Image (tube, rainbow, N blue to C red; front, side, top):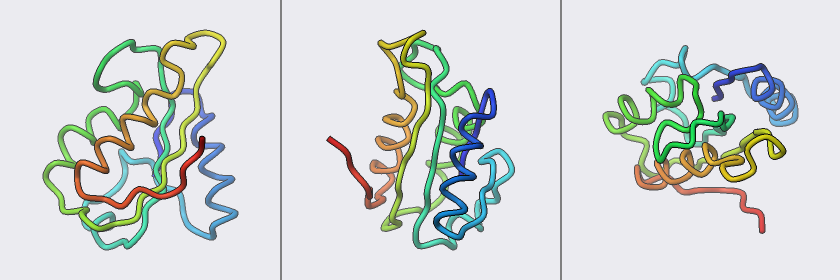
Length: 117
């Protein structure tokens, strides 16, 4: 699941989809029951230079994370997060939306997968 401002996150989601053999869906088009039926989820967002504590992607994720996620049961699901952004234009909040996805899915009881150092 992804959402995008400029198409870059959709492009990366397509690469991941091809490698993993799964379909990609914009989170704005996702049905709650299709998400809750899955054991594992890959989610991705851009960070748009919002400089906010919440709703950092400037995409449909902003609504979904705060209006939908709290009302569905995703506890115990495996979740991997990817993020894209513009490090040169807004280095101080580069990929903050990926952190927001991570924090909110983890708070919802998901098992977070795939870390980097």
